[in-house]
Amino acid sequence: MIILAVYAALFTGAFMAVSLVRASMARSTDFTSLKTVTFGDESAVRPDRWASVISVVVVFLVWGAFTGSRLVPLHVPGPYTGATSFTYTATAPDGATADATVTVIVHENGAEVSEPEPAPSSGFAANDSATVAAWRSVLISAQRNDGEGARITAVEGTPIAPGQTVAVPDGSVTMTAKGSLNFSPDKGLQMEPIWMPSPEAVVARLFEIAKDGYQNVALAEHVGWSLWRVIAGFVLGSLIGIPLGYAMGLSGWARGWFDPIVEFMRPVPPLALIPLVIIWFGIGENGKIVLLFLAALWVMIISARAGVSGVNITKVHAAYSLGASKWQVLRHVIVPNSLPEIFTGARVAMGVCWGTVVAAELVAAEKGAGKMIVAASKFQATDIVIMGIVLIGLIGFGIDILMRKAENWLVPWKGRS
Image 1 (spheres, one colour):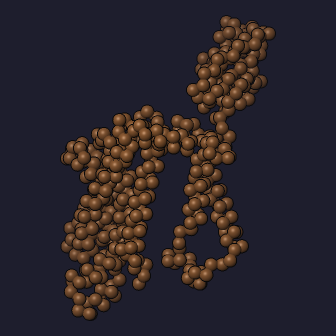
Image 2 (cartoon, rainbow, N blue to C red):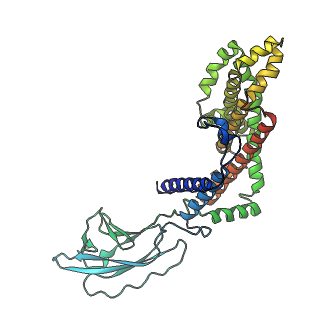
Image 3 (cartoon, helix red, strand yellow):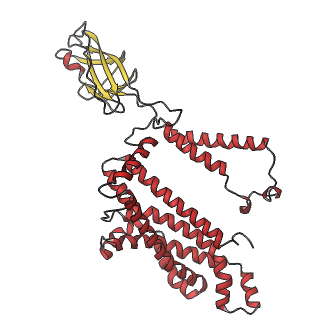
C-alpha cells in the first residue's frame, strides 16, 4: 500500500508539473489544438511522450528507493543495523526483582559477526547478548541465567506476559509461551532482497547469465525457444481464427454453429487446459504449441467477427449499387474495414500468448524463458525471476511496437471514414 501511495503521489505530481510547464510555453498550433471539443474524441488523444518517459523513470526510482539501490539518490528507511540493547525485569520466586540488559548486534545478511561479551550484572538477573541478521529475529533465553524459578515480568519497564509484544529501541520483543524473549529489529520500509532485489542486482545477474547461461543453456537459447513457441502458437491461432471469425460474421449458419463453442471456450483459462493437453499431445513441443494456439485462437475469432460486424453498412450498400459481387465486397470493403479490429485482436492475442508461455513451459520443458523463471523460483532466486519477467516484457513490448508499425503501414485508413 505504501508503494502504491508513493507511486500515485509521483504520478499526480509529475502531471501537475508538466501541465504547469506546458501552460507557460507557447500554445500548440496543430490540428488537435484547433478542435473545440476533444473529450471523448479518440482521434484527439495522442500518447504523451513526456508522460511515458517520466513513467519509466518513476518506476525505476520507486524500485530503487524501496530496495536500497545505489543508483537512486533517495531511499525509504531501511532495516536497522548496528548495536542496540533493551532492559528487562526478572522476578524471583520470593518476589525480589532485578534488571538486566540484553545487547544485540544487528548485522547485514551474510556477514560474520561475533557475539559481544555481556557486561557483569549487579543482581541475580544476568546480562545477555545476541546477534541477528537484518529482517530476521533472534530467540533470547534470558531467564536461563537468572536463577532457578526466576521469570521475566517486564521489558523496558512495560509489563509483559507470554504472547505479548513490547516496543523497544530499534525493534520489538515478544515473549514466547516458555518465557523466552524473541527480539525483532526494525525492518524499515525497504524490501528484503529475497523478495525484491535492487535494479543493479538484476542487471548483474543478466550479464552473468548472458555470459555463462543458466542450467547449462545459454540465455539467448532460453529466450529463442520461448519466442518460437509464442510465434508458432500465435500464427496457427491466426490462420484458423481469422477465417472462422469471418465466417461467423458473414454466415448465420456458421455463427450459430460455432458461437456456442467459442463462447464456451473463451472464458476457460489456458492453464486449466494443461492436464488435457498433456493427455492428448504429450509433454513434447506439440503440447506447448497447442496450448499457445488455444490461447490465441478465441481472441482472433472474436476480433475477426467483431471486425466484420463493425463494417459500415453504407459502404456495403454503395459497393453493391456499383455492381460489385460478393467476392469484391469481401475483398474491397469487408476485409479492409475489418483489419483494424483484427490488428487490435492480434496485439491482445500476442500478449495472452506471452502470458501463457510460462505455463506452457511448465510441461516438462528443458529450455525457455518460462522454464528459467520456474526453475529459479524453486531456489528463491528472485533476481533471475525478475530478469526473466523483464526480458519477456521487453520482447513482448518490442513485438507490440512492430505490430503497431505494421498496422500503420498496412491499415493507414484506420480511424477515417
